[in-house]
Image 1 (cartoon, rainbow, N blue to C red):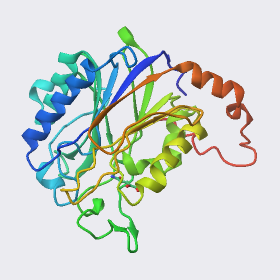
Image 2 (image 1 turned 60 degrees about the vertical axis):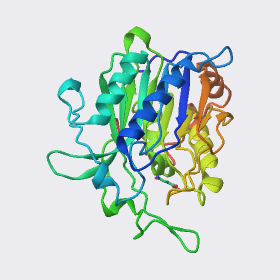
Image 3 (image 1 turned 30 degrees about the vertical axis):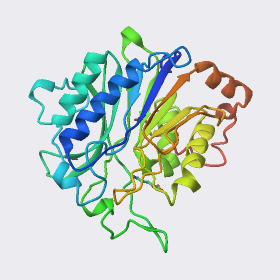
Image 4 (image 1 turned 180 degrees about the vertical axis):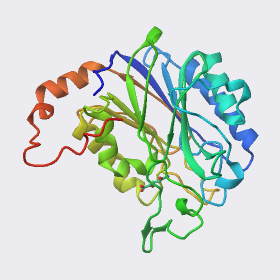
Length: 316
Ligand SMILES: NC(=O)CCC(=O)C(=O)O
C-alpha cells in the first residue's frame, strides 16, 4: 500500500481540440499552437495552468481504419528513463518539446501506438514533466465496441475499436515531481469511465490518486445521456476530482465527438465545462473541497467489507 501523496492547489487546462483531420503534421502543429495558447491564455480568473490536457486520438482521425495508418512506436517501459532523442514517435517528440518549452505538465491526450515487439496496436495516453521527460503512459483498458440499435453501432462498424486495437492491461497514474508537487493523477481513456472498478482502484487505498483525468471522445448519441453522469458518478463515489477532455465536434468527419470537456469536483459539482466547439477550459483544483467532502461524508471509513468485497484492493 502506498502512502497518501501530497495534494496542493493547482490549475488545470483542458484543450478541446478542433481541426483534427487527415494530415498528421497539421494536427500536431495545431495541437502545439493550442498548448501555447493554453499556457499563455490564463487570466486573473484563470491563472497559468500547471497541467495541460489534450483529448483522445488527437493526432489521428478516430476509427479502426485510421489507427494502423497513424500508429507510432513509443517504446516506454515504466521505471526506466526514456530517451526522447532516440524515440521513434514524432508525436512524443513534439509533446516532450512542448512540455519543456512551455514549462508545464502535459497529459498529451492519446494516440494510436504500435508495440515494437508484438506489432499490436493500442490507444495510448502519454504524460510529460515540465522538463520534457515522458513519465507515464496508459493503454486504453476497455475498448469501445458498442451497438445501440437505430442509434450508434461501433461493433463491426468502421469505428469498432477492437477491429484493430488491443486492450491495455495495466492501471496507471503519475505523480507530479518534487520541485512542484501538487497531486497524484490517475489515468484512463474515454470508455474506461464506464468501468467503476478502474477509477475505484486508482482513487482508493491502492494508490490514493486525488484527481482522475481521462482523454476522451464520446459521441452525440451517448454523450448527452452519460458524459456528465459518468464523470459526476466517478467523482462522487470516490470523492476525487474527475475530468474528461474531448475533441471539438466536427460534423465534416464521420465520428461526431460530443465535446463538453469537463472538470467535476469531489462533491459532484461541475466546476468547468466547454460547449461543442474548439475551446480551452480552465479549472482551479482546490484540495480543501476533497478534504471537506471526505470529512463531511465519511464513506471512506464506513465501508462494510464484511458485507461485500473490496474490489479496489489490488495495488497498482
Ligand atoms: N472513444 C470512446 O471510448 C467513446 C466512448 C463512448 O462514447 C461511450 O459512450 O462510452
